[in-house]
Image 1 (cartoon, rainbow, N blue to C red):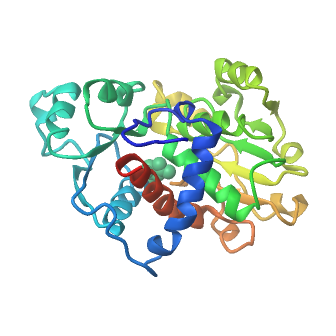
Image 2 (image 1 turned 45 degrees about the horizontal axis):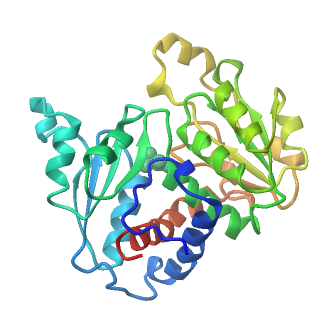
Length: 308
Ligand code: CP
């Protein structure tokens, strides 16, 4: 029997397909509570610490909403300003202190591997809320949930991943998860922002159908899901390299003329200029409901980790 009780979630690869499906079905049960139509006290007395060393709107606030909706409490910080990190406290010391204050820790940090380090020093479960260009596993779980609810499932879908596939942690995590399902993955990016070769190799070894495209028009032909990402400006070592690719792709009404009626457009958000605002009112746009689904999915994760 699958159990996530007491577990860390650092990479989507920590989870089996069965465990992913358990989280998604638990999220279905959480939906009425997430919408405020029902109440729950299942996590009463439990405390979540949100340690955000990098900016966030959705991940931090939806985790906090998830905990509060289930009757738990929240502590944490959204910036290191005002914390002892400014005095030079190390990440491992910060974690060792916070584990004494909370039952579960969510961490976002600019450096890849930081969540893994936190999990190694913490006796309490640690959830990766995004580590540099590494992984963002709970985003992947809400992405899969969105596909399940808004695209009618995950299996047998053609999914286009568009944008910054080099630095985008959401597409790194998501592509590994999609490889567990029967999907076709089409990759489209500016040439300098291609999916890392080692990830493509891993995906193929996992048996995924994955193909790189140079033409977005060609890639979205017959696709069921278009997953758009912004260019991760903050990860570029050289700002002039960012300027070269900024604004190099944009989804607008013209490009949507030739897509499947049922195509859904997803985006982890925030968006900059890669989806024109007038796409928002089309039936294809699912990115705002996607960000809401972060609440029931994170409720499910917290419940399964803290209660089982
Ligand atoms: N999708 C996502 O991680 O958004 P935030 O950076 O606002 O948390």
